[in-house]
Image 1 (tube, rainbow, N blue to C red):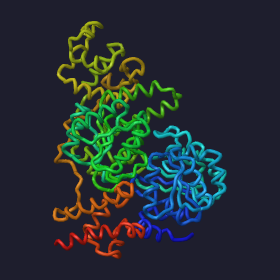
Image 2: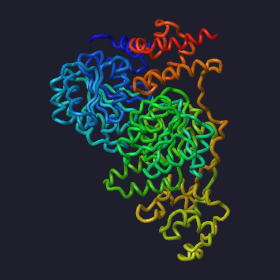
Image 3: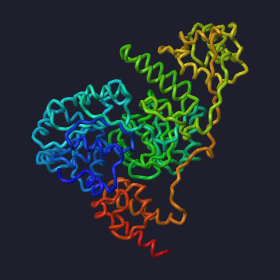
Image 4: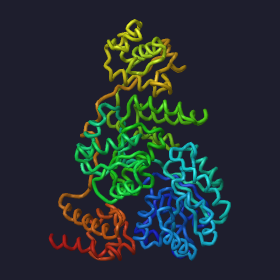
Length: 601
């Protein structure tokens, strides 16, 4: 080993001390052990393999599915003075050969390789001829076949244990429940690995879940009243909805760009690059976007459709607020989301065990949506984590929802489903209950049913809320063929017979903006001139070096410069996030900016 991990942390990365349990993970790998690391987004996972790779002899090999991001990851390391490279399908033959020779000669500290390239005989032969410091398997949840981001190429990665039994391996992910962790251990042969499970809590993210009620209006209100000028990600389930939403937002004056797997590779890369390197960009995307995104200042994540699982929801919302500043995760969902997902799962090609598991995951997600207590407690409990007290920073904590005894209304709803032969969707059942006079009502003689018109006192939206909650709770099922006909389940019998009562949440208006904890810049009014000048300096250097601005310095580093006003190299080195190489490259430019403001005082 050349330098100690602490020396590398301070002089290369510019931080004074490790966050727990980074130091224990790094010690484990430096000593030749294997590790499984579950750590929330923004918790500093990358240092857990980058520092041991620098401390040990040989090259650290990082297996990552993120081809589109490898260039930025490598550029960021090179700005720190780390000899880093990558091997993937975007490179020409000459570049591949040069990189392979550098690996063979031990000239690289870190190399990023896509899993589909790693399993090739040529690559395995190259690694056998090269000095290897460690293998880091990033986004390790991709190995889980029942997970939300499964990659078949990850199943081949157990070959590393077989071919390189003495090289330490570390598998890392931000999202893994107990079942996924067990699958990672089994498939990657990590049975003897030390496990490091950090808490899953992201206290700076405010979780808010609202029922859809003119969702475009809800989104527009959120963006204009809370997030004007901020960077964010908006997730949709379908590619068409992504494109339509991005186009509509652009018409409303926002810098909104689409991202999904159906776009050309060049357009996806262009939009992702703009998102990483520019301010005020909103990406509208399918789940194809976001894994491994290092952008620290994403202030919001919005879901316009219901995620399929809590794992997917946690992974996607976790892309907000990596810098620790206040951020918002807003989910809008409705009855149609539940019906659509239930149908998709029932009609999937998976075996019964797969379908049952997917239903369990959806049920857990629906439970999080409909819960009337602290959302964060439920979210963390799902991952085996514990939060003793309510968080005070989710919508349920800020503005406790109303509940009501809905037993009579639910009996009406269930009876209407039963008497219409369980052949119709929620829309028709609501028309029956409200006594609507429509062609379809007359066609099927539903105006002759005993339940016709018995629910006229409740509005369409109130009935939709009731049906949404009944489906979410499993009291009604959805036929996956045809038009989503509602069917009674065994669980509804006690309520239908009057043997049990049921409390439902009453849908209310969204939180008032005044109730919401907004992002606070933490920069005093009199310091805004210096703050903006430092940001401008960072932007110019980023453009010059061809990297996103946060690769030069994070906002937190600039804020510390504003507070400490360093005027020489020694003082600048005391600012968090500034190591030897960055001082050498950028120190003079930032000190000059601070000097100018000091002399103006």
